[in-house]
Length: 416
Image (cartoon, rainbow, N blue to C red; front, side):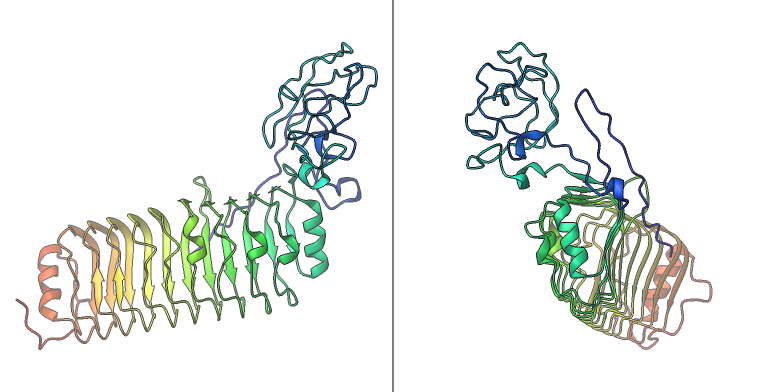
């Protein structure tokens, strides 16, 4: 299966009047993040009360961005017309709005969408508040504590690119806390981290536009800290949630807040993963693969899946039930080599375009309810030692899809 991990471009915004771009790249001339904030949060930028009303497109803080709520900037000639607090240029994280002319008769201009200073910020608010809204346009690789500190200092709210944490030394991401990052437009990857035990430093992240990849993290026990994540993937491309080779990962419950998931799901080789509960709200996926997870005992979170390209549930030795109560259509279904599997439930399955395979599940005694199934390109139901052959023959009599591929099941059991 191929995963089309999303690669995003660098969008550009259009400036109006006094809006200035500073691209967030790694060259010397582009080392600072592009800001959408106004001057409200820089020291002195919020402004003192204008004695004669003229200001420099300054903004009042939240109740006191400068020393006086609703004031303009320093009295300096009215070149942009100070704004009052109620109609000041910029709301917190919002779009620019026009200010009213100051008493000095300056012209009304559009302010940059800014973040107000806090009430105790003194001259124009704390610099940290003003950093909300910063967009950084590059791919970021964090390999050390120094990399982590540098990224934290940039105060990115949107990362227009991919974020990869790949380190032999990082134990946690606490340096990022409290994190300003809300959106990663590309992929978010935790890859080959030998000592990483927590990703909680990214708490506050709301959207990943590409894939969420968690691979080969030796001691990471969970994804706690990602509870604020609401969306993964893009409807326009194939994205993937990949959980692979994480020896200590026991659960993905922290992903339960995701309400929009346009992605395939792959969970392979996670020796301690017990449940997929947390990855919910998947109604359609190109692929779902759950394979070689030694402790997986329930599927849980994929109960809403209605359509799927390839569905694979294979070699999960403790999995007792393969339950997909909402699944209606699939290209391929492959339920193979799950030695403890007792229950197969696909009550709404109507069509399998290519092959429906149930093979090598030694404890399986029933195919469950397949009354809705009206067509399958091929049936391969073989090597299930406890599955009555007569129930397999009854299904084939209805679908005529077995050929010679429905053998090796229990020929001694009877069917009612």
